[in-house]
Every structure is written in C-alpha cells, then in structure tokens.
Image 1 (cartoon, rainbow, N blue to C red):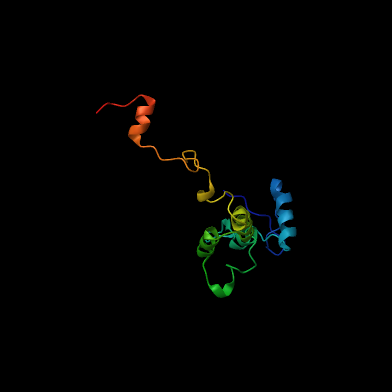
Image 2 (cartoon, rainbow, N blue to C red):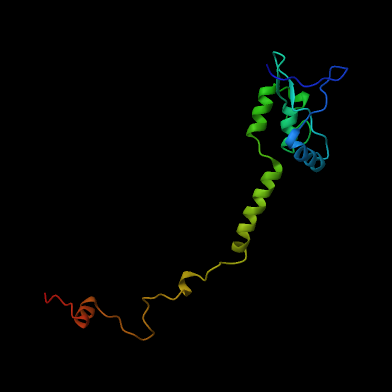
Length: 145
C-alpha cells in the first residue's frame, strides 16, 4: 500500500519531507520566489497522484499557467501540456548558447572568401598552361600513341 502524507489537524497535507532533495527544493523556492506546492494530490481512488501545480512550479512557470480553474483542464491534460512544454529558463539558456555560436558569423567570415584563398595547383603569374601530352613527355610517361 502506498504511504500517505501526514495530515494536519484540519485534514490538510502536512509539511513535506523532501529528503535528499531538500536543498534543491529550497534553492528553487528562493529562485522562483514562492514556496513549493504540495507534490501530490488525492487521485480518483484516494491514492496520491502527481499534482500539476507542483510540476508547474518545478518548471518555473507562473502560478496558474496551466492549472488555472478557468481553463477547465482535467489533471491529465494539465500534465500532458506541462510534459510537452518547455521550461523557460532552459529555453533561454539554449538560445544564449546558440546566439553565442552565431556571434562570430555575424562579425564577418572566419575564413577569407574562396577566391582569395591560394590554390596549390595555381600557376605563377605569366606561366603558360601545359597540355596533358606535354606533361607526359616531360615525365617520360608518354604512351607513344
């Protein structure tokens, strides 16, 4: 049987023992500026199930972003929307990294254009082009056809 959360005298869930995650939860409370919501809620059969408000808080979304009453979304739809969503802080970090990678490209090419690159096969100025047959005669590989 699943362990039930301790209840207060009024029947509300008591304080959560976050265990090894207590430091991380407290740090996220400081970052978000609001306390962690209770992580579970009673399910249809009385067993605890994941609370969408907790997931919303974990993702750093504003309160009621997905869980607002006026949205009239069932718990499963709220969790689906949250699971398919993007954590704003993570998206912002990814964009900063991508923009940092693009910055050198904005400030000009990293290499000179191909037309200014020296070609190893290029002839010195004024040199005449040699035919394939002439190259073969010079190297002694002429087939004598």
